[in-house]
Image 1 (cartoon, helix red, strand yellow):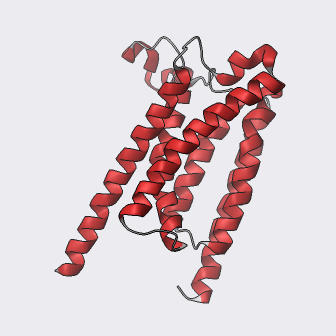
Image 2 (cartoon, one colour; image 1 turned 90 degrees about the vertical axis):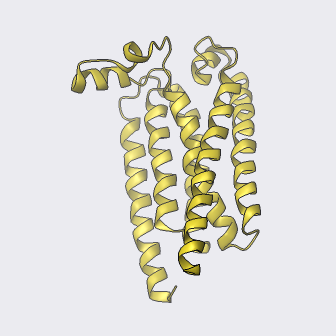
Length: 217
């Protein structure tokens, strides 16, 4: 990539990052539980700083960049409603006259499940790309460590979430954690993230094989 192309990439991605930040701030207005909001968004600050580094240092592709921002947008919506109260049934009912919960027989709000699944689905490919572009590992090992990153990060997030809740929010820990009465909530969240990562990496592996076949022909 030429210096000019890299500058153009950095410019476009910086603008997209600014747009995301504006979106995240906008979702904070009128939040149902302002006390929970800062706890939900504390990882966002660290993530944005990490993305600024990636823009400047790793030559991250637009595909990976958009995938990461898409996940963050899902998180911003979840943070606004502290996940347990995201009104997706109301939104779907407004447009289609039916609710997701009634169709699938859901008895809890599953927005948090969706976001954990999307973490694995949307982060595995960018992590693999960063590992390869920084030449930490390549080939099979980049996919393996991308998978391990998703699994380990999911587990660490659940532990960190639990510690934050009992230290800073013991009176409303259940609401912050979004368990909704499910004692296996953390395990299910980690399992969904793992499934998302497996799906993403299988698709990535298929693309790599197709590219190799194309070049060989």
